[in-house]
Length: 280
Image (cartoon, one colour):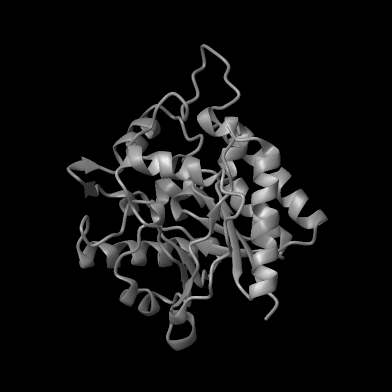
């Protein structure tokens, strides 16, 4: 095995920040900002990504949040799918409900992005949850996990897809033993979790490590389903302090990782969010 390259994209719109929506995510009609999450800007990014992948003949994995793929009409017809879910004492759908009352669907409901991907007929469509709420056992019960899996099945049937790979929201795994029962053959492994300030510092410093290595194939992959896909390397989001990371450092880092994967039969799994390319 000469090394494996995987690229996966977490397609979530505002759902990835449903519990901490701020001005970066919202569209304000009184002022223009190039980094707001309008569907028009999101769709342009998706189009650009698809054009690049097609040009380079690279097949990617697009992991969609189920709710993000729905139209407003589909949401209205299936509004019972959006019943309250409390995570850490906060209703996960609070900001979504507020946006719906204000007729602001941008970033929440965007079927065009999904349609663009499936129309290419060359990329894998995976699941990133129905609503992107966390799925670790410390925060939700097994019954709530199974409810989320059921909603994934419902929206998959609605959209005519059958995802076989699962990307955990926020890269925190939970109830892995239940994934197979929900039809998934593989999942992206979680990442080590630290308190947010420490995590941000660690992640930023990691961008300067030009001797970073590719990842080994998981031993779980060889023994049972669902297979564990290495957690991967996050493609630097060039915003805020991360914008200070020189591009030549990033190129040297990935040149080293690619060579390591080839020479040592390892895996380079590159992942990102399409929306990061709106402003970074």
